[in-house]
Length: 114
Length: 113
Image (cartoon, rainbow over all chains, first blue to last red):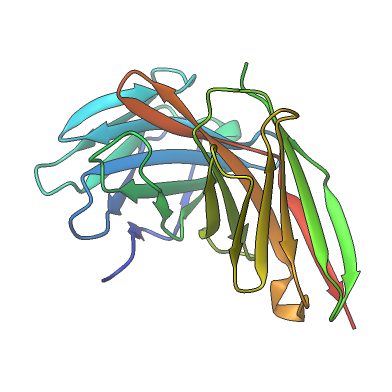
């Protein structure tokens, strides 16, 4: 099986712009979670989607949003980018059948905001 | 509360055993995980343990869980240079029917010759 894929792998944006990141889960997985990794804050949970519905949300401002499509692919969007949004954004997928499903991570999208 | 702590750095010699420690605070965690991150890469799942287990062994990896003290450890036997990476422990926090992972700060393992 192919693993979790994320596109693009690298992105450079300027303050005030918006960005959309994409994640394709492992085939058959229905749950997609997003995490932000920064040197200062470490790994933090953004949100989780299951069957096109947001099932869980972390403590991030409304500028961070996401969605999931019927084929389980997910996108996350960050509007009005700030310098502090520079981070590695990781997507993880799981089977979604229960709530303790093991999460498998993609390679991440590295976002640099100038 | 949700807080997972790890020491920041560990240096070992090739061939020795490495022990990476982690403490967590949420007693309702059902699964605890160890992930490995190499430079420029995502997180690779190494192993996990269910909270009703004390120990799990998987080839060179041994996970020990002390639920009373909320202490988790990962032992890597015969550590190799390819084991150099950052290791994260994570607990699965359940809210209703959803779960999320809360990660530790990560332990950077340096393997020297």
